[in-house]
Amino acid sequence: NAGVTQTPKFRILKIGQSMTLQCTQDMNHNYMYWYRQDPGMGLKLIYYSVGAGITDKGEVPNGYNVSRSTTEDFPLRLELAAPSQTSVYFCASSYSGRGLSGANVLTFGAGSRLTVL
Amino acid sequence: GDSVTQMEGPVTLSEEAFLTINCTYTATGYPSLFWYVQYPGEGLQLLLKATKADDKGSNKGFEATYRKETTSFHLEKGSVQVSDSAVYFCALRSSGGYQKVTFGTGTKLQVIP
Image (tube, rainbow over all chains, first blue to last red):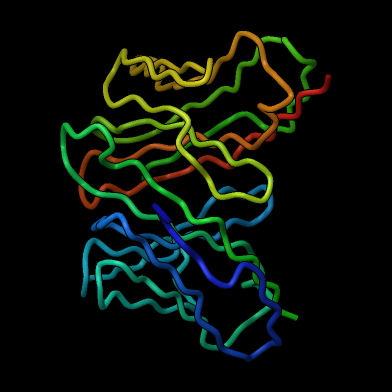
């Protein structure tokens, strides 16, 4: 199984440019998440989705947009890149369900390192 | 709101030393608790979990017990190896709402031969 696949792994952007980080999962998980990881700051939730067509803001949504047109895909869009968005971005997924052994455990992608200059 | 506090790193230990990484939490209701591990250049992966008070999660020689009375979930291992060098994250999943997951800031462990 591929699990959670993120692309690209590395990207350098100029201030004001736009880009999309891609995320695909093949586990039929209903929940998907985008986190950013800054040094010494742990993970901050940007956006999440509880199913196709449903998305909501996390802790740090400003400057980002998402969509969830299918169960598998959850792209993250940066419209006007700023240096403050330099970070490592992680996509994750999980399935909900009480009493199921693997339920509610996050599966992470390998990360996308973004630098904005 | 929910929060997770874990001990500052980095932690440097010699091989075969005893490891403790402290984690305390603040949450309403009955959250599930997790330890995730991140090896260099990789994403996070589940190390162990506990879903109710007094549960003990264990995996790869690591253990953590869900202590509701002290709101803690400390990670322990009796004898660390060089291969355990990684960043360890404590996390909780809230029992209500959409099951929000809150992470601690991570503790970097370096094990030297």
